[in-house]
Image 1: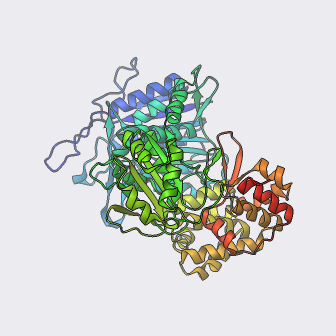
Image 2 (image 1 turned 30 degrees about the vertical axis):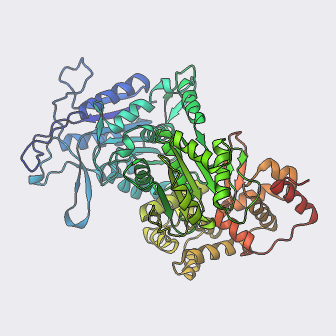
Length: 617
């Protein structure tokens, strides 16, 4: 096994000047490269080449004042990814990242020491690296970029590789310090990404025998970034790309999970009634989540915020991400969550055992009092909210008497804050409206192709840009609609027939939903239809064991696969690691309202439903 790493850290840029003619040298790029190189050598069994290297060949250290020109850097990139005999190739770059906006198309560059914009010398194109990776036969390819505008490479990488996601022989992992339009920052003598990598790659962070892989690193970088008291306020956000299988780095060395236990204890010490997420990943909402968290923490902002948008636009999932993040950042002492009308699963507990006609102020106070473990009175809730700063989330607010609730809650919030999710825009003067719109094209495309890879759908993995653009337009970028498209394409095993059929929706997202749900209903089995109705009646979903114990087999294994394929059920695990199945609120409402064929349960089925819903024997 040969593992080769090229680690580059450029401080010196004698010909790159600002408007005042001052050279744009860097302070920390060389230190970043030096630290990463030592880590790779010590733990990863990498053969590490560093640039610029000191003249003294007996000393393995980077030259803080050395120069690296574009020709040398390109040659080294070519050698890294094109030379035979390696199983792993890793590139780390710290230095200037540049964007040339000329001729109407932005192009990203690695800044090298001979960069001179006055002479139109930009350095090495990001596209050059993408080309070398795309034509390389090396089975494991890793790139870490700690430079401004490094997210520009994401698009280049994505375009090169999204049609190659069926490859099993090439595994790739890419992390950029920031998005294409952003500047990379530094902290404590290192760039932010280097700081994060040095933390998450520590063997002491993981238990003995645990293989640290590229997915662990990606997740660790994201978690540490969100947990840091300052990073989420920076004008940068790490960007990730991976394809194929996870790439192993080295094994953990910790004899205990003290840090993990400490984090768990801290999380458990806070009130957290946030429902479980219903999707594996929330796409395209990083900016929105960051904006809302910043507003929630600001003493100059209003106390109540309303996240407003149409059905299936991901309001609830975004609110869950916000709730989890503010707890990790220690911005609030707890999260209280109330869902209007429909109940939700919170870990292994169901928040309410039946639907209420409307959530009033009195019922709202009762629910908050239960979560606070205080007497059921407005004065008690007021006192508890005064003692600690909490975030209160009212989900599906439009189904409640929210005007009465808001008129009362604003008087007792103190330092606490409230976040609503609602299909209805709330224009009350003491509520700040935060519209949630459809995903942008890149996020829509990422979602579609990631799901295509996860569900193994060649027709979607090989989609053209034109087809992906049309899906984005027809779905209005609504995450639920995009997931429905994935189910349709998998069933058809082709894109064009799906696009032709979806044209009937004419860009109206609820018409789109209705069309796809009715299509799915006609094509799924009778067993799947029965399961869908059963789960639709059980407000907080149902566990697999409950299905098997209470309803028999019902053709369950096949029904589960079929409903998952159509994205009609959401599959999660509770804190006991037991699988639980639930429906998106729009799907549940549609099933209950009779949008699809009515279901008449038998007497025995009615009895079982009553036992689950209301505890009636």
